[in-house]
Image 1 (cartoon, rainbow, N blue to C red):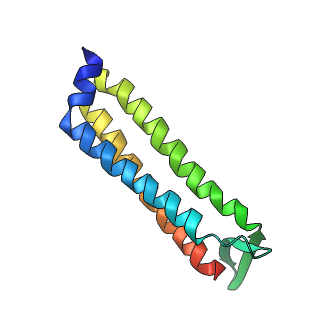
Image 2 (tube, rainbow, N blue to C red; image 1 turned 180 degrees about the horizontal axis):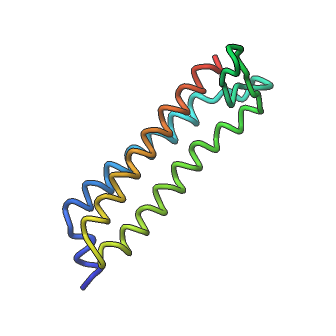
Length: 117
């Protein structure tokens, strides 16, 4: 009964669909915009006492953003499945928080990919 109830909940389905689309967008944006033809790419950028500091790595390191998005989405869906039985709003809140994490991941990876060009 619980499984049917979880998968028939329209709010869970909507949040899961949006989360899946956001994750797919993040994956595609990282995979399509990463240029493996360069030897190094900027992976981290920060300022220290007014001077810019740049950490360069192989371009394939940017794929970790896509892997992180998949990992976070799958784990949050499994956890929301478990939380749904205990307290429904906590499952909703977890999926909403995960959307925020994926959105932040997309913004950060986009910023680093813009530094690459």
